[in-house]
Length: 381
Image 1 (cartoon, rainbow, N blue to C red):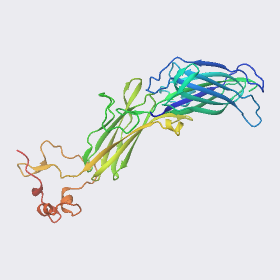
Image 2: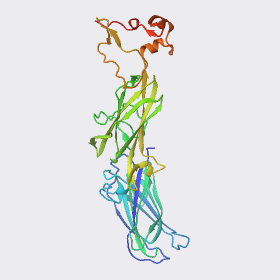
Image 3: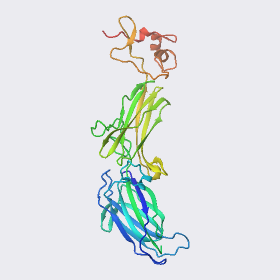
Image 4: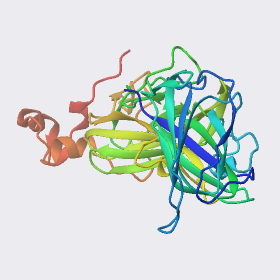
């Protein structure tokens, strides 16, 4: 099963005809439906099945039970589309699809369920395998007033008011070159694109204190804002992890392409695992939050783990014609991070702290002092 995606419900109540306290009025339905495919991502959702059930507002609430059901296609439009109600949940620059259902009801309380559908044929429908349902318990419809509420779900009375239910799709963000389910390979690319390159590492095999530069390129199918979290998953403590700015580097297929780079400095000879986790962002109470905090226990993220192998070998040096130690021709030497203390050749061979062949130690060490001319060769002519 694919990762589930986000659904959003916005419900409004509006004044319609009157009805008695004891008898439910026949609901009047209004729906707008044109679109038949989720073209921002490859989910199976073509619309939603709605169920609205009259429930008690309190222990003294007497009413005639009834349920309204309807199947509604996706709206031929993109949200939030400068609609302030929807911008209470979504960033104004994001792009989401959804369905809308308007129904006139007697004043009272209602349980609302919106289930994503993979197929709709009249009254018949099939549930989505990709996205989850969303619900609101005891939504209050008030006489003569418009009531607005907003709910989120992840994809993955006698007088009369109205209930208008909007439900939108949200998709998790994606690392370029990944399948959207996480666990892709480091260095993967997106079908040959020279912009959306996934995770790029300039060198997985480095020396102690030698910086490694890593860049990750991501996008969100709904063009939500992005947050990237970098973390060391295994290995000794790193010396430095310098994370650069998150930048928009392109716009493709209706969404921004984001890139963030980091400089990783490892101090000790060992293998390390680092990860990047990508979150899409929405709004709650006027503050920007991770979308998955709005749809818990569902998640809305992508991640990838990549290795760095830090090794040790003596500096690539040789003796030139003047018997001076210089970098081996064609080598730029090892670029060490400022302030990071690495293991020198003398420490490695002559300190006795490392498992070096005793025959080698006897030949190139004078006690704890390195005999450099016995270690480094002459430079090639």
